[in-house]
Length: 194
Image (tube, rainbow, N blue to C red; front, side):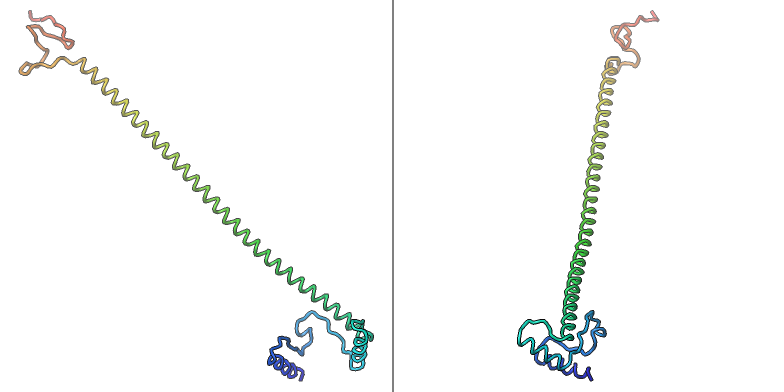
């Protein structure tokens, strides 16, 4: 019966576009951590209303009214604590998200720094390799220059030690000039057959 009544009331509230709703179940069955007030009855309710009309904002005058006022105060404190807890959880959740973001950002920064260090290491390695190649090239050029100088010296020495070229038609052997036989330094060699 209470369920039917709650549905009827809620349909009427909805028709009139009022957001509040009625639930016939107990707070415990609704999952609310709220202490229920005690039923005061007709006479106690009438006394409380009359006292409130005479002196607005006055404390309750009946025992049940006083008990319900204490229950309402405890429920208000409980609701305030619940809202504060929800707010703290939201803040914690926000902090947790920010912490995760910060950790992710720190990880990305660390990776970027590692990439930059690796790029710098590779750049230094390329510079070192280029220096090695230049040194090898310089040494090869130096060897080639040394070999060319030695070849030039050898050619110069060989030119000095060669006998003069003979005119065409002369026989091979030691050059002959005016009946004399000359050695490689163009000195006259005595004829052994004379």
